[in-house]
Image (cartoon, rainbow, N blue to C red; front, side, top):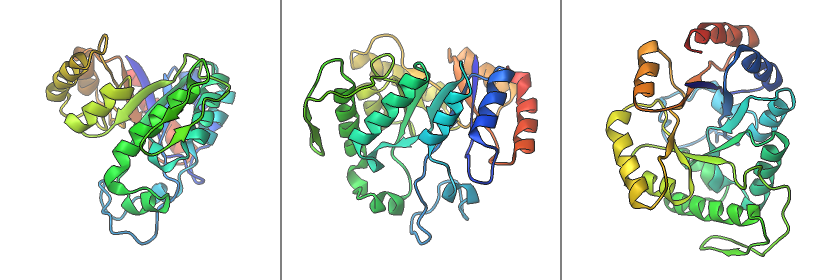
Length: 274
């Protein structure tokens, strides 16, 4: 099983280049980074991880800039977002960022897609909360038009793009795309519509939800099985063995948003799972 990691990198934690080198040298498979552009100081949205909201949420590095630094100092380490809030981006600019990172890293990028929890953050980006999932699907289709081998136009409910020359292209036509969120018909419809699989936070309940996802996947005419990568997992030998028994091949372990010495000690602890 591939053992990757995720961390809230901030201006107060280990740097992305230092972490990336250590991960690759130690044999870890990847580095996934979350995204928050900002956290409004006044909000009515309760944080799903509990209040007060942890300090790191308002100090998070831009994931694409941080992953570019990680890519520059490594040759094998997988790079990913966990997750990108696609609805909060201009899709033309985001398509360029993704394609450039994937091209320069030699196809090592995984695009984790999510819908967010912070209503106020999304509102500052002009996102109407009730339609953010539909907006995300629309923007994914627009980006795929820009990644197409030939100039391809797209006109959707929320945006459009002319047939355009848009280079570089992602290494394999499009990066591996995983959608994060809670199990259910709405999420599984997003996954089967435009993604390669699911990024379930914590990985709870997979024994019940995984067969349903596979059924929906097959009913949608998708070939093979969806990729499922449990994310932000607090590891134990038993938990990882359970994922292997389910046929999963990658898991993302949660690192603390801490200084270099603390993070490296955690990597030493996690080495037993490699």
